[in-house]
Length: 191
Image (tube, rainbow, N blue to C red; front, side):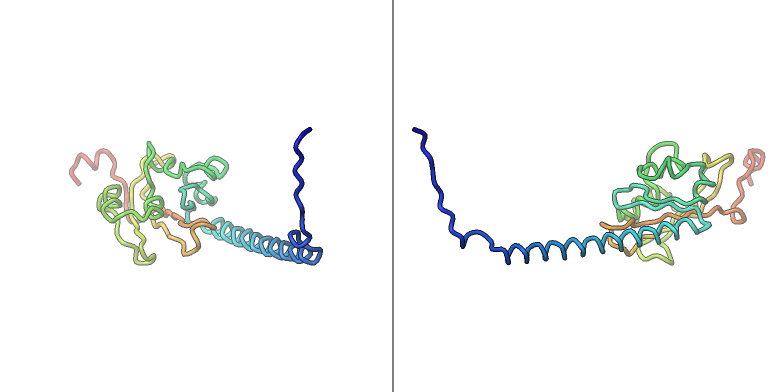
């Protein structure tokens, strides 16, 4: 004969109807709280997206994992890269450099040292007068569109929680009047 074990269950060990009702109410309240938080986060995301889209400065936003979360139409027009091609990737370097390397926004997200930023921007950078802990630089990008362009780079580090919302944004502005590229004949004349 098989051994059968009998376990006695005392009614005091199991939750009563009122205790179960209370637990259900607590879980419902927690669920409602998190639904409200999710709605607030979606609204914040929508506001950020609208701000990025409405600026005329070519802009991309990356999160703490260096994933592109937003770009705007000005960025698409400048680079020829669409949101479908770049959002959700970590290829923000692609329109600026021939091979993978950090953009200034990546360096700001990583809280890179002044020496490391200098290594990439070779003295064309300076500490930002606008953004605490930020840098800005002007740089020539030869493969950007149909002709080389000087851009002014000013990554902005967000004060928002890095875990929940995109952190830095990296606007770039074309410098038309401040710098002009020399033609090959001007370069040879020593000017």
